[in-house]
Length: 261
Image 1 (cartoon, rainbow, N blue to C red):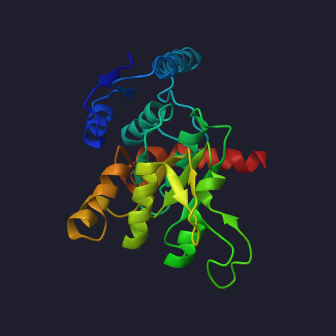
Image 2 (tube, rainbow, N blue to C red; image 1 turned 90 degrees about the vertical axis):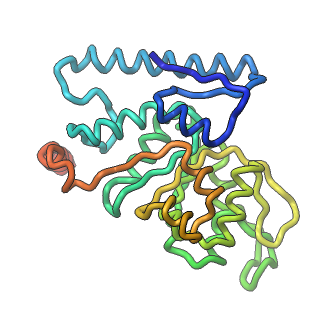
């Protein structure tokens, strides 16, 4: 049975504890009736989805149906359970996993099963660009902001309006940009490079890292306040060597996919 937490003492730590303890979602007092009803409807839809999956495949070890995710091992079944729990919510998600474990696949599953599924999913690898270009890509820039900026350009946060933005390798984000990203999370608005005007945004953020951000925060290489903003919900994807039960199902999946193509 889904549990919805109602609290007058909302904080990032409260959200983390609630979701880790199994809460479906949480609302803060005073709450809006429409928001409460929408949350209850999402919880009901989650129950119906579970019941339908069990009826359709009563003997199957896997009751989750996410595109390109094959899970028979307990650890991956837990990942699927977390996807199903967090997808209907607006919670920020932090995904941990080595390169190649499927962090972007999990992100797509969360987005595709969320209320934002018909809106854009925008991805960027924070390790792939130098700091100045990364800032422009994320927040956009105004004409004349720097050499070569011949026109106004919206950033990825604006492009993802109403949808989801996936920040891969978030641990590579320079400290200066971490502060600007924290402001976006707090104020729900962005300011383009070279501009004074602010733009309100409604974007869900999913971040991923192959390094431990909590350890980086302790070392001073990642902002502690930003870490807690990201770590509302964490999903750990184990490497394939630690879940050998998934090897054969994955091989069969890829063989069937190639046969169809």
